[in-house]
Length: 375
Ligand code: NAD
Image (cartoon, rainbow, N blue to C red):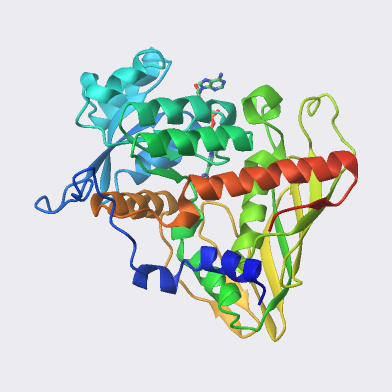
C-alpha cells in the first residue's frame, strides 16, 4: 500500500477500531479536561438550533426529544411567529430565543453549550464563526460551506476559540452505513474495485434557495451529490487522486438557470478503485454499491433518513434501525461531554475535504478535463 493510501485509510478507520483508539482528551490552558461531565452524570448539553426550516422542524427538533446527551435548549430565528410557536411547543424560555442580529448575545447564555447551524449553505460560514466567537461548540449542516476558504475560516475560528466543530454527517453514526464502511475498509470481500454511488431527487418549489447559486453554492451536487462523494470515500477508505465529470443537458433551463440539474462524475483512487456517481434534481436515485475482488455489497436506500436497507453477495445486512439525527447529536455530544476530541471523520476537516472535492467536480465538468487531486 502506498504512503498516501495508508494515510487515507487511517483517516477512515472509524468503525470497530475507532472506539478502541485512544482519543486525546482536550485540555484547557491549565491542563484540565474541557467540558468533562465528571461529577455531573446524566448532564445533557443544551443545543440551540439556528434556522427553523424543514430540517430543524421535522427532523432535528423531534430527534432532540429522544436524545440522551443533549436537549433542545434554544432557537435562533428571523421569524417572530416561529419563535412563539417553538417556545410553546418545546417549552423554550424567552431568554433562550435569539434572532440573527442579537445572536451574538448567546455568549452570556450558560444554558446553551452547542449551536447547530441549519441555514442555507452560504450562510454557514458567518454563523459558525459567530457561534465559535460566542464560545460555543458548533454543529454545522452539510455541505459545510460553499468554498474551501470558507471552510478553512470556520475551522480556524473554532480552533481559535478552543471549541469543537462537527458537520451534520448523520450517517457516520448510522449502523448500516457503519457496516458498509467496515466491509469496504476491512476488505471483507477483498479490495474494492469499483463503486457506484448516486443520490438524486426530484426538486419541488422553483423559488427555493436550493436553486439559487448565491445561497446554495451550486445545484444537486452541493445538496445531495455530497452523499455520493462521502459514500465512495467511506467504502474505499481512500481519498480520490483524480476526477472527471460531465453536466447533462438541462431539461428545464428556466428552473435550473442558476445551478446544475444533473451531473455525473468519476473518481480514481490510489488503490486502483474507481467510482461512478450521478446526482440530480430531476429524478430520484439513492444507491451505494461496491464491487470487490471476491463479492459485493450495497445499500439501497443508502443516504435518506431511513430505514436504510442493505445486502451483500452472501445475504442481507441486518442492523438495528436508529433515528439518524438523534444518533448523530448524541454521538457528538457524548464526546463533548467526555472532553474528547471528535473523531476526524465528522469534523470540519472532513467537511473541508468534501467541499474541496465538490469544487473539483465542478471544475472537471466545466473544463471537460481530468482534474488531479492531492489524494
Ligand atoms: P429550509 O429552506 O427548509 O430552511 C432554511 C431556514 O433558513 C429557514 O428557516 C429560513 O427562514 C432560514 N433562512 C434564513 N435566511 C434565509 C435566506 N436568505 N433564504 C432562505 N432561507 C433563509 O432548508 P433546510 O432543508 O432546513 O436546509 C437547511 C440546511 O440543512 C442546508 O444546509 C441543508 O443542506 C441542510 N440539510 C441537511 C440534511 C441532512 O440530512 N443532513 C437534510 C436537509 C437539509
